[in-house]
Length: 358
Image 1 (cartoon, helix red, strand yellow):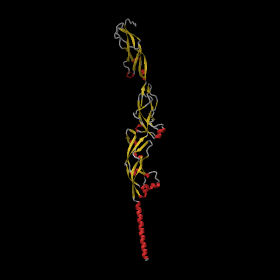
Image 2 (cartoon, helix red, strand yellow):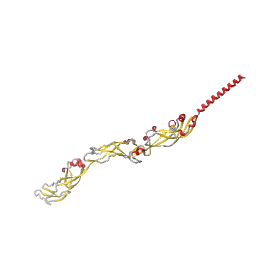
Image 3 (cartoon, one colour):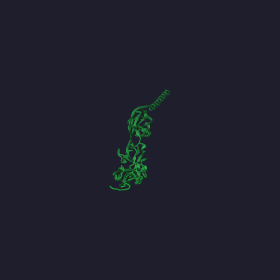
Image 4 (cartoon, helix red, strand yellow):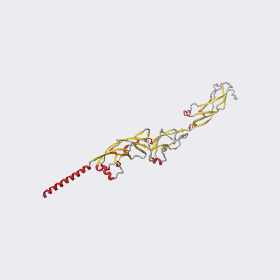
C-alpha cells in the first residue's frame, strides 16, 4: 500500500511539474506575440535657420506599428512623432520657387517609417527603453510638401567714394549700382530689428570704396557688398554688383576777345574799309579745351558783301567759323554761340583814294 501511494504521489508531482513548465512556456510565447495598431502622430521639421518660416502641408500622419504585447499599454500617439531632419533637405535656395516670389521655396519630401518616426523627446528613459522594440511598418501620406519662406528686407546699396576726379571734370554722383531689380537680404527677424529695419524697410548696405582720383571718363566697376553679421543676400550672386561711376567734363561758356574780321575784295583795285576790325566770339566748351581757344582758331567773315565798286557801302552780318587746320577735338567739342557785334558797316574805295566815310 505504501509503495502504491508513493507511486501515485510521484506521478502527480511529475504532472504538476509538466503543467508548470508548459504554463511558463505559454507565458513566454504569449509575451513574444506581436501586436499591431494604427494611429496618428504629429509631423515636424527639426532644425532649420532662423531666417526661414517653415510650413508643412500636413500637421499629422497616419502610421501603423507592430510591437511586443509587453509594451502594448505604452503604444500611445503622444509617445511618438515624425521628425524631418533639416540638414538632410538640402539648401532651400535650390528648392522650387513658388510662383514668382524668389523668397518662397517648396520641396516634396518622401517619408520613411524607419528613418523619420522617433520616440518623442518627452518620453521618460525607462519607457523609452521598452519602446525600442516597436517597429513602424507604414506611414500615410508617403510624401509631404515643405514650404520655406525667407524673412527678407530690401537692400539700399550705397557705394562710398574717395579722391578727386581729374581737373576739368566733375563727379556726377552718387555711384549708381547697375542692378535693375531689388536686392533682397535675409536674416532672422530679431537681427533685422537690431538693424532698425521693420517689415519692408530697406537696410543700408555699404560696398567696397571706389577711388575717383584722376578719373576723366565714366567707369564701370565691380564691388562687393559688406554685409552685417548674420545677414545674407537671398541670391548668392548678389554678393557682388557692378556699379557705374559717372564722370562728366565741366562745360563752361567763355568769350574769346579780339578775333579779327577778315574782308578782302576780289577786285584788287579796291580796298575794304570797316569798323570794328575785331569781334568777340562766345563759345561753349569743355573746361580743359579753353587753353586751345586762341583768336587764330576762328575766322570771321561777312555773310554777304555789297557789290564791289568804288563807293559801295552796306551793313553786313558776320559769321564765325573754325579756321582751317583747327584740331578735330576742338571742332567736335566746342560750340560757337554768338559773336559781338553781329554786324558791321563796310565801304569799298579805290586804293588810290582810300577815303573812308560813313
